[in-house]
Length: 324
Image 1 (cartoon, rainbow, N blue to C red):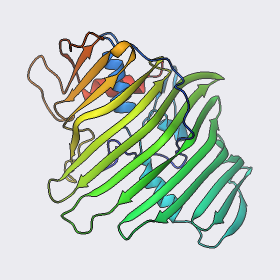
Image 2 (image 1 turned 30 degrees about the vertical axis):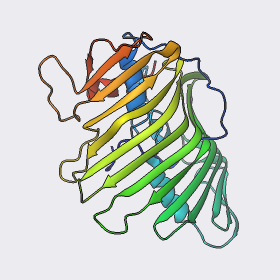
Image 3 (image 1 turned 45 degrees about the vertical axis):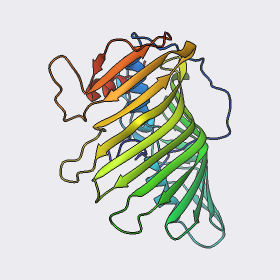
């Protein structure tokens, strides 16, 4: 995972995001002790990871499709660099792709659009669709990036599609003792993976507001607050996720960690059911015997949380990597 890492992302060139608001694509999911760990994996790993491979029967997805289980905004840094490194002059330029097809770049003021036309990047990967970026300097300390996407990446029998749009506001620290803030908002962020014409995975992040404060000198912590909805074909359901206590992660360039060390998250499902996720330590934390790095408690709709279900970052990551 990139550094600093957890829920704003670090992904591949072809990363994307959300569009107009719409009704959930999955029905509300009743939460129970049976699905608690799977829901936690979807809420914490899928929407908080940088890119990693998704295991499929007999193969491992590579290239652009490795970002499938990565929905959150860490890719925004990558996109910002891409958007701000473009030509300054207005106009349109079309160039051939390395192995066939073409790509067109249209610049108009602070907006740049990429249009890919059967663009073959190598012998196995073809991109079709558009990516558009608008970058604005709203003040001396704040930059706004708006992005919209609608593209498909094909590699043999694998088809990976992302669509939508979002806005990220980056507020830089006026001096080293202050924090740098990222806030990513949007209506819909959808990724779909198909293999041989069959949908293997379909995950949508919607109505999201994710705020990250990087406190580099005062506490050396990354502090996160977020709320979002998740529609998941893996879960066959829709849930709402929000922080109830700040999620914090240590920023240590010498011994970096991949996951947060503290925080609490509430997942809401059908029939007033709830899942409370309490983070007790990062991946380096060794819990007391019989416990775990993460505590899960389920309220099936009665208003009372049940007994602790213990899990670890390793278990949740493995669950997120395995495609049904």
